[in-house]
Length: 301
Image (tube, rainbow, N blue to C red; front, side):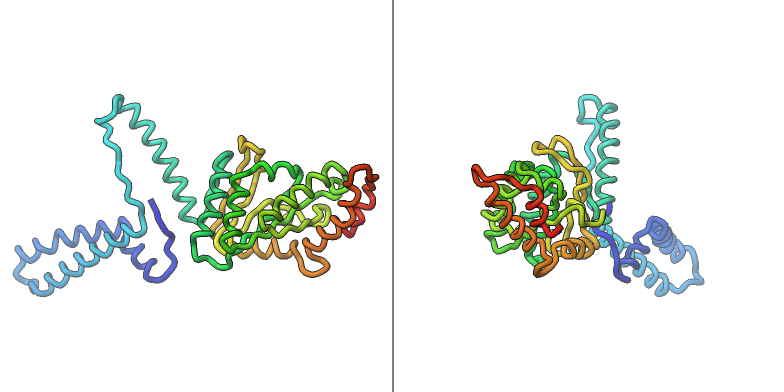
C-alpha cells in the first residue's frame, strides 16, 4: 500500500530496485552464489564474497525503502473470528476499499461524502493552524444560493474563528446571482451572514454570478498553498448529502482562480460588497421601501 509518491532520481532508482522482478532476481542470485563457491573451483572466492555482499546490501536498501514508501498493516487472524469464512469475505472487500482510497491519497486526491465533508473541512483548518505552512491564509469561494446554510455550520465557523484568532487570515467570496441580490429577503439574509462572518474576523466580498465564467463559479476553499477543498455536489445544513474532493497538488491554479475573481481596488469583491451595502442597508430598515432596481445597480450592472 503506497505511502508517498516518488519523484527524485534516487527514489526512482530505489523504486526500480524494489520492484518484485528485481527483488526475485536478487534473491535467486543470493541463494545461488554460496553454492557456486562450494562446488566450483574455477571461481575466485573473493569475487563471490563481493557479489554476495552487494546482493545483501541491495536487499537491505530495498527493505528500508519499502518500509518508508509503503504502509505496513497487521492482517487479522481469521481463526479468532466467530465465522471465519464470513469475516474473510468482509475483510477482503474492506481491504480493497482501503487500498483504493490510499491509492487516491498517494496521488494527492481525496474524495469525501455527506458528514465527512464537515469533518474534513474542520480538519483542514486545524491542520493549517498547527502547521508551519505559508501563507497563513484561507481563500474561500461560496456559491451563495442559500445564505442561511453557512450560518448553520457551527463547527466550520468555529474553526474559522480559531484560525483567525491564531493569526490567520480568511477571505470569503460570496458568489450571488443578480436576481437574488435584487430580492429583499435574500439581501437581508446575505447581510446577516456577512455581519456574522465579519464578527469572526473574516474579510468578506461578493461577486455577481452572472459576470463570471463557468470555471470561476465554483465552491472551493484554498488552504495556504497546500490544499484545496472543492465542493462537487452542494450539501445541506445537516450534511445528509453532498460530495467534495481535496487536492494536494496544483493548488496554485485554484489560488489564481480565486484572486482573478476577488480583484483589486474599485473592481474588487470587497468594494462591490461595500457599494451593495451602502445602497441596500438603508432599504432594509423597518418601513423603508424596497427598490430591486437600485439594489441591482449597486453591484455595478
